[in-house]
Image 1 (cartoon, helix red, strand yellow):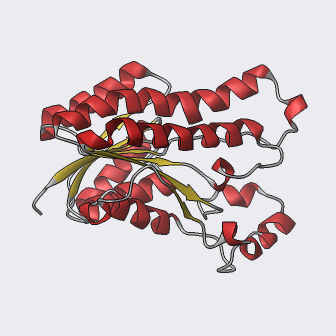
Image 2 (cartoon, rainbow, N blue to C red; image 1 turned 90 degrees about the vertical axis):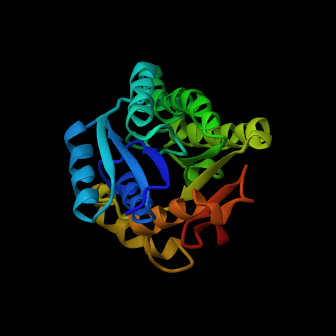
Length: 247
């Protein structure tokens, strides 16, 4: 396989992040698979290698600027630079009305879902500019454009991510950087199994396609948006949601 471009994916040990890493690798991109769980990241690296792709793995806590810097340095050292950054790592919290959320709960979600993205982006940008430009794709959510009952920290962070990507697109577009937010609705990552049975049963009907998404569908969209085929798309929130927002 001829490696043409390189990518770094956060939260890539499972779910949507894993799907993004696999999809990028399938297009010939060399991928640094990162996750807070280093063993999970390495398992995805091995999966990419088994499929004939090129990958490295590294543990990365996105709330640490030092760990972001080490990841980018690893890409530089092995492949000469960075072309694509996919900021996927994120967490949720149990559904809680806003007045009952503690400052610690609020801070924990914002630390990962907003601050962790910013810490990555501010270091990814110089690396992309070294290569003459590139692409940043951040995984947002339907909660980035709508309210979510019981999820105010999550919704606030995802709204903010959308604004961050729009601003980066304006600031760096003339220098060859595209910035995008991708908004999944409900996706079968396994977390949905924690919901009550009646809620799980209602999820498909919330989408125009009458089903929830698969991680691979988000990964395919991200890989395309990160490719030269999507060269005119920047500054956008792009729903990949099975028609959830059409209702």
